[in-house]
Image (cartoon, rainbow, N blue to C red):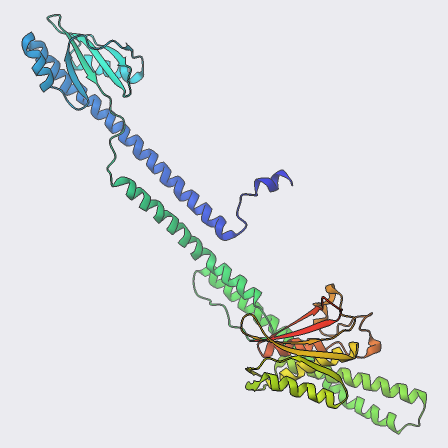
Length: 439
């Protein structure tokens, strides 16, 4: 696998997840920058407050302690203590020299506040918490230590983490809703394209919404109508040609029948019969494409199939019923009979026998299957034989007759009654199975 493919291995395959991740990453980055800016502002505010306090309050406190008697300084030091610093009368604790920028800034602020009269030395006190001590000497030579606990960022309120969590949840929801709002029309368009069937009267896509979505929906609806128009025109041409050919074929049949008996006459009659069958199947295909106008009726499916099998058996055809499931279905009886008759005719033509069964589908529908033990169909041709005028050259050649329209007619009629047709080779013993699924 190439490096480019390996680098894309983590990237989602669906556009929905990709857009969601992009939106979420952008919003999270903006939210993170806001948090960083807020933290920096709080840190600078805390630093400014601390330095401002040192510059004003500490200067006043130093002056009070410097002018007070030595015996009063201990209790004054406790009284002048604040949250971030306290005064210690004495040399304080030994520490290490503080050379950081903040240490130098604190020392400069204290010296400036005291008017430059008391040189200040800053020391860092080791420990769990950061502590600084500013050492200076009062006017009478007494040592004074300012114990400073620098504040970092201002303490966070207890409710703030919950607010941040709620904001993150809101970001995720907004990203998901924005992604759905943007991609739902695309999903509807893909579903409509998958369900596109010119043989069925589908509903148009909604042409409302944003201008881009409405434009795409209008273009798709127009395309669907054009495709349906082209197919209807093609079928009308086929029907017209087939209908117009019937009259000359009939005249030719009459003339051939009146001709003296001869081998050439017999060949001519056979050719005319084949042409006539082709014309009749062409008309049947055109009618199935337009729909016969037959009304839907409720029928006992088991009795219907059993009656159809008996009709074939009465003419000496080897048609067996292997399984029947009782039930009532709403369908077009004549269209259903034509579909099953085409399946049975094919099975009898290429295998000599046929077997028909009714089963209950997984989704509650009715599955009618016609099976044979003939040569079957190559796997790569199972879909092709459902197209009009497609015939196999080897297993189902012209020598066996047929026009190549039987399965195409069955497929169109199945669509007109809300069903579907599937062909597959039987896994054991060979042969073909033609399956009709009814809702």
